[in-house]
Image (cartoon, rainbow, N blue to C red):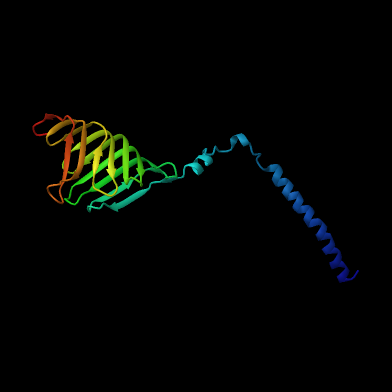
Length: 200
């Protein structure tokens, strides 16, 4: 037998043997591998895909702007449901900060808020708490803030604590002082009751 014939036979034999060896190895791997139990598969978080498509959301949105009278307004929330043709934007776990031109800062926290760009207002609700740099802490059920003007107004009764003591009133506004340009007034109205606390 010539060397060429031996080489040809060897190549033919390898063409048959190697695929059989590969098949045997694969079969062994499948036999030794752990069987997959669908019940043991990790539970995936349930995602409401249709709900997300119907109500687009963004997480941790922020907004910063300047009001027409020169105030600085910033908004941040945990989640925002975006505005649609029929519904305004809904925000959850909102923090609003308003810095007016007289140097005062008012921060407001609320569980929920509705932002309507058509009216240029944001309505905060759900345990609204406002704190001012002048030392007041104000609680109310609903508060309206302007997006294009440095203006806050409650839509419900308020309870406040501050330098003068405890204040209960039917309403509250923070707005520009019409008699002093560049100054802002925090006004309690609609049946104000003051419990004076010396040194409070």
